Amino acid sequence: MKTAVFRIWRGNAAGGEFRDYETGVSEGMVVLDAIHHIQATEANDLACRWNCKAGKCGSCSAEVNGMPRLMCMTRLSELPLDKPVTVEPIKAFPLLKDLITDVSWNFRVKKKIKKFKPRPPDAPDGTWRMQQEDIDRVQEFRKCIECFLCQDVCHVLRDHRKYDEFIGPRFLIYVAALEMHPLDTEDRLEELRETQGIGYCNITKCCTKVCPESIHITDNAIIPLKERVVDDYYDPLGWLWKKMRRKKGSGGS
Amino acid sequence: MASEVVQLTRRGFGQTMRRDAWWIQPLVVFIVLAGFLVYATWAAFQNKFYAFGNYLSPFYSPLLFSDSPHAWIHGGRPSWIPAFLPFSPALLILPFPAGFRLTCYYYRGAYYKSFWADPPNCAVGEPRASYRGERFLPLVIQNVHRYFLYAALVFLVILSSDAYKAMWFFNRDTGRQNFGIGLGTIVLVVNVILLGGYTLGCHSLRHLVGGYLDQLSRAPARKKTYDCVSCLNRGHMRWAWLSLVWVAFSDVFIRLCAMGIWHDVRLF
Image (cartoon, rainbow over all chains, first blue to last red):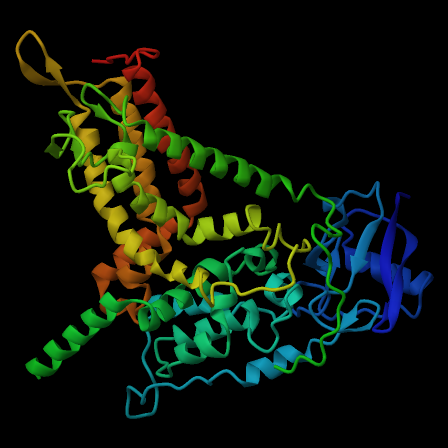
């Protein structure tokens, strides 16, 4: 049977090291299979978070050969097995043990985002009417499985640690899903610019590159939000145009 | 958003566990963009060999002040330009397309990586600990992109007109303009197609034509336009590079023809 060496980070917040484990490799295996095999045979105390093993729960995020990936969706056949495969915890969040990090910062951030505020119901029975084409754009963002790989790879969080000033790509798509929703009436642009730090994004598209759900985070969420911020804060001709239209509208009514 | 939970060791410049040749992409971007910048600057200062017959180099179009028959205002250097400043008609117009590319969302991401290593590539350590992003000066100025878009749309119309004029050749025997296609015509038409694909797929344009609306279904014409721009936008990177290389090649082609080094081939 073919074998491969896995160089896995072992340790906790106080410190740690890479340790090598050799395990058998068979057709169709993913990195998570190898980790489970190592757990079962060589390192019973290896801490690893996982759940669905189908790329839908977002639990097994790690860095495989230096790139943020879901372990359950990374086939060994995609990796060069002639050298040890490195498996590390994601870097943007504090390490708890081995491959597990504390991602609770993300849940605290989410609570601070203004909630969905629909317009009054369209029908007397308290229901709304929406066109599918209006909701299509938002549905892409709803595919997010909250694996936080985009947060991990984003250099604003990973390298510059702007945790107090920037919410990261995951929550920018969350804001986009709310802001672009055809029923929503809330305005989140001031927070987006002031406290959620959309200006920190410098469009490297790394978040899009690592997204296991292939969400076009930068092109379809972040840039459109940046453009909406430009509308409100950086476009004097736009203000003038809006003012004239408003004036014209009020004169007509 | 408490920061006290965050405790990780910052990686130094270029440090990464990535196994792939992550440096190739930023290096190629650096070489191509730097090469373009050097060539375009050199060509803009030349102030000669920018037209050949009915062909006009896109670096010099619109040709505002010149003695060339392509000029909008004949007479060469205008008197209001101070004598100590170098003059070339290209210097008057190139800031607009240059500004459009400089503030383009795609190019921003690309040159932040390759020229400023911010970051050098995804999951690769950076050289600097401090970071201001596009939130503060000077990079907050990137938000001016839509104004350069307006200029780029005007340029697109002018370059389309140049491509059309490149189809009409002067016949010395009859003294009239005859329709024809030369290699230069094809070069200039392809240039307009590529620049059109790039400009009309702009992220700002996508927003302005309908992206700002939450209920596009109420504006069917806008929806259709938004879909078209989105379609081009999906290949924005490809359009950006192809149009950049081709616009430089168009200038090279016309320059070398004007210098007599290359010869234009009249297809019919």
